[in-house]
Length: 148
Image (cartoon, rainbow, N blue to C red):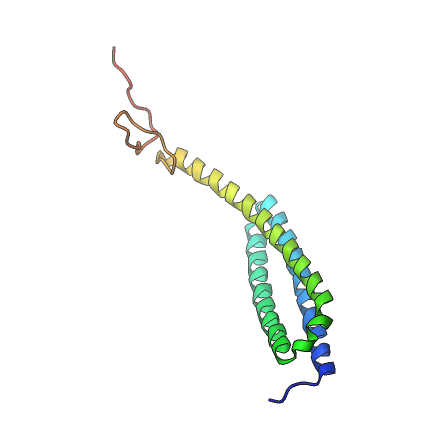
């Protein structure tokens, strides 16, 4: 395959950068939809947002591989792509923050559910109570502490 002329490489980089930015904008919107689904406990919407996130991440990986290939073929094009790349990096940081926020909420809720299940089933989870011998008690049910 012969190298592309510089003008074509720059045009291809602009197109790939535009597609990446569009995918990142969609990803941010999907992360906001995921946040809304978590807040109202809508598991169907949460599943849909999760699937859409995976699709967008696969698309972004392919686009980034294409971008890197274009830059390998035409190192002189780095300067022309830098402004678009700065915007893409900022969008990536925003998406990372949104994803971390959502993950934190999900993990907190999951911890609450596990704690409630532990109480309901009488099984001690991590960080359980210790008995007189220093072992972790296997049950939260009441025990006789002393007899008169």
